[in-house]
Length: 365
Image (cartoon, one colour):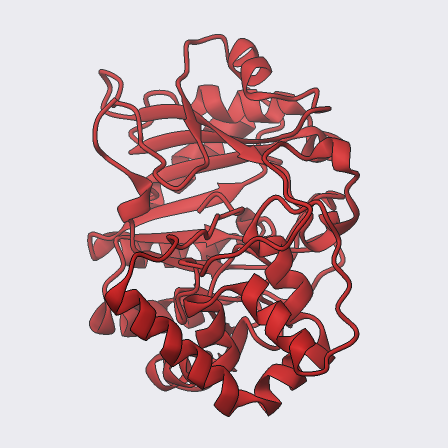
């Protein structure tokens, strides 16, 4: 192992499309075959060029939905970003790797466009739509292809049949684990220069998976609202499939009245980001966290929030809070009081040791 850590990456994530070849019951983005929102290459390129000039990312992630459904639009965007020297990554279900030849063909096309990292997602829910054989085909075709990293991201819980251990056995080679925690320390590259590893991620009650049974969830779990600020809140770090600037991809931002803002396919990126970042609820999420905001909303008269324990992370609380129209209205109606709480917390932070931010990513960006 070395000291290379994904926690030090500066990400720009394009949720390229809500269209997916699968409709997983656990999908936090609620993607599926019937979705319609999709970014065009020209939109991604225009936004990327603006971000590059304002605050250069170290990695551009193309996620979804299933990004490969974009075809040439995806390849054009990858090529444009890669030519600037910024690393590129896609998050895919490998539905395209139906056999050895199909897998090899797609890998060649992606590498030809300049893609640096291939990140394949699988779990029990994916497997109902995309055979694990596709993951194996994609993995084998990617060995020695020149990627910076080849990753299999495994969502697992106590009752999972598809686990990191089983994936390693099926891949037929010794592959190190990276736990999807705050540090995400990466393994050393193989002799061919590529890092090959499996990421072990926890299943979460988010998006379409909000009603997952408790026995799908890995500890630690909390029966109370988790506290702490969220360090994932970064206005402008995400662009939704509908073309809107967003603050994170730990919960589906598309259509969320707090987590997403202006349409950056129709207006410049920087003012849209400034407007989103100035929102009092967004600032409250970043500096206080969704748990404290929930409690404040209730103290100011919101009566519609119903806790849904156990909680595994802040994102689950955040999604419930930010999709409650009454809670959002209550917080914005009390903006002056909320600003005062935020300023008080800043003053405490300047004079004492406060608990660290507790954000946890659930999209393998």
